[in-house]
Image (tube, rainbow, N blue to C red; front, side, top):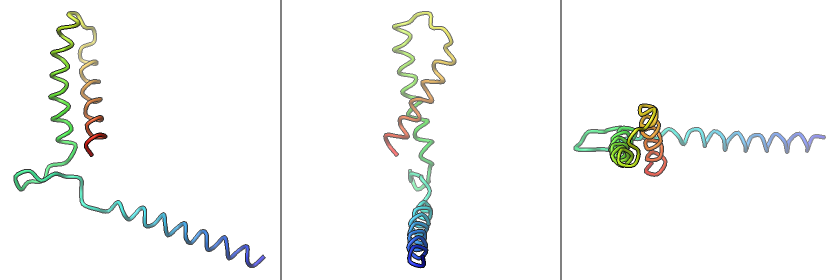
Length: 91
């Protein structure tokens, strides 16, 4: 019975050590990009890129659909979609 207890304690000790190392590895530098000696957050560049791509998409959609319903919802959803895609692809 003593060996079973010590094996489970050793396994728990190793597992807790691995979890602790995994949690502490996230304490690194903040996600920012230096531009002209000023640090900007990553999400700022994703928002700018998604705004540009949304405006390009808007021009394309206006040529295809003349009377698009729920314009505010469509462009807001496209803006959010592009921002998340840029975040996933670039960072």
